[in-house]
Length: 213
Image 1 (tube, rainbow, N blue to C red):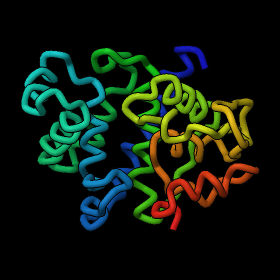
Image 2: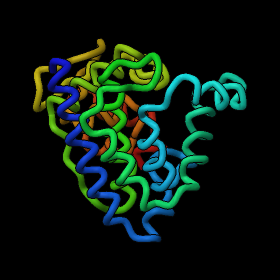
Image 3: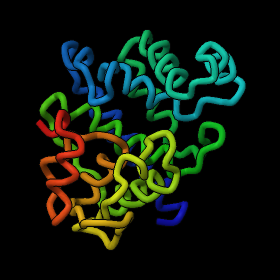
C-alpha cells in the first residue's frame, strides 16, 4: 500500500470504529478486552490518543519511569475517565488529518485501528472484518518493528504464510492463515490459534497451550 492508500484506510477505520462505539451498551464498555488489564472502554480511549503530541507524552513517560507499555496503559486509563460519548467524536475529528504520534510511521495508526477493533469486538461476540491488504501491510510492519510485540522471538522457527495475500515471513514449518488472523498472531493475540493451518500449525499451538485452550 502506498501512503495515500494507508491514510484512506485509516480514515475509513476511524469512521467505522466511531459508528461501532455508538452501539456499545454500558455493560459492553466495561467488558474485558483482548488486552490483558484493559476494558473495551480503555481500548477505545487509547484509540483517541493516536495524535498525542510529544510535549503531552513527556509527563506520562516520566510517571511510567520510562516504560513504554506502562505509559500507554496509564494514558489510556486517564483518557478512559472521559464520558464514552466523547470517543466517537474524537475519532471523527481525526479523519482527514495525517498527523501521527511522535516517532511512528503512518502504518502504526492503521495497525492500531485494525487490531484494537478486534480487541474490542471479539470479547463481545461480535465480528469485524479487516481489509486483507491493509491487514497484511500492518502485519509486515509489526514483523519488521518486532518491538513492542517481540514477534520474531515468539514465532521463531515458523514461516507465516497468508492464504489471501502474497505474503510470507520467517523460516521453518509453514503456518497458514488469513491476513487478519496473521496480524492478530504477530501482535500477540492468540485467540486466533484455532484458525491456523499448515504443517507447522499444531507445533505453534503447542508453544502457547494455555492460549489455545
